[in-house]
Figure (cartoon, helix red, strand yellow):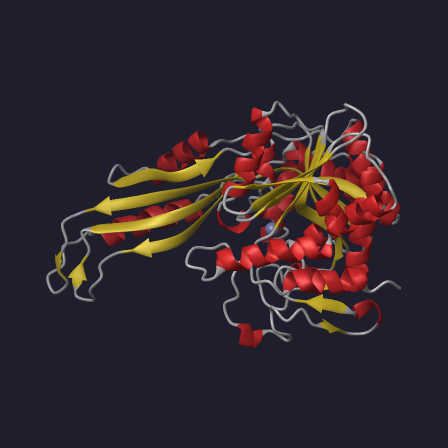
Amino acid sequence: MDDAPIERLRALVRHATFSHEGASRSAEALAAFHDELRALFPLVHEKLDREVVGSGSLLYRWRGFDKRSPAVLMAHQDVVAVDDDTRWTHPPFAAELAGDGDEAAVWGRGTLDDKGALGAILEAVEARLHAGFTPASDIYLMFGHDEESGGSGAAAMVALLASRGISPGLVVDEGGAVMSGLLPGLGPTAVVGLTEKGLMNVELAVEQPGGHAAIPIPGGSAAVLARAILRLEHQPEAPRLIDPIVGLLEALGSRIPGPRGWMLRHARTFRGPLARIVAGQSPLLAAMTRTTRAVTQLRGSSSRNVVPELATATVNVRILPGSTVETARADIVRLIDDPAVRVRVLEGNDPPPVSRAEGPEWEALVASILEVFPDAAVAPYVMLQASDARHASRISENVYRFLPFDLRQDELDTIHGIDEHIRVSTYRKAIAFFDALIGRL
Ligand SMILES: [Zn+2]
């Protein structure tokens, strides 16, 4: 078997392309990464138009022979930080190849998120160019440089395409994957994100007279703030099933026998009771049924013996489609029900629109998935994390969030964690998926 794609992936992973605040050497790392891409994928750089956008995002245009609406394949160049590399089985930027047979894997930060997709896209394009292939429609490759810290690069590239009047018929970015055992006994399911949750950070602030801790006044700012936090904690939003999750349950139900499968296949009819059942299964499933609120930061006095005048908390809110920044903020004010607590939106974006699970673009995506993963059921879902894809909703109605990786739960858990790695067989299938998709564009 051809080892060259694996060696090229290893070369990509060796670059520590951090984008988070305070990351040192990130500009140099990104420049070196760009040089690496040129060296590894010469035909892509010879035949495609290439623009550097923002502080290092890359936009490629592969010209098609027809004037159909273009497609966009997205991935990001940056990776998240590594807190403690001594806990990794293999060093995070050594890109070691380890294991035998189906367990052979490339280890390192970014193998799954998201250099695996970036490399697989480039492999597929390079091979097609080598074979003399020209796509019918234009294909853009959009590789952000700061997805993990806000996605300004993707926003800038989308704005550039918008300014040129380009409206892609299809956008594919990271998101769901091919997962086994979503429910006990269930075969592989390819989950494709039709939308993602909105994101909002809210500051709760309480200002009361402070003073010396030796003579405290009852009802200080810390206590009022704590009461507000507990009111949010004790009043989670009632679960509800939005359309993409109904679609997910229907797809799962089609593979489950007996009354359980029957109920799932009729999820649309049993929305109410099913929402409560689904929310009770796990924190992951619960997060798909409601807007969630997590307190992430607390601030009070900087001294051990000074009662704070100002106590604040940051609440990280993930907004379910159907709600907005404004309604989610209003809910928080209503639940806290205390004029002493100031509620201020620090930043936020509404959930992007829900893409359709039908039409020719969706069919092309599903056919490409089934070509490579013939045993998989394809199902829609809602991505819980924010991604660069949200920007693309500005210019396209068909934005799908899917990583063509077959992943086990233990592998999924390594994303943003320790011991991130991708199996060689998984990476080869990802290349085959993008090749199949390109053949349909
Ligand atoms: Zn990512």
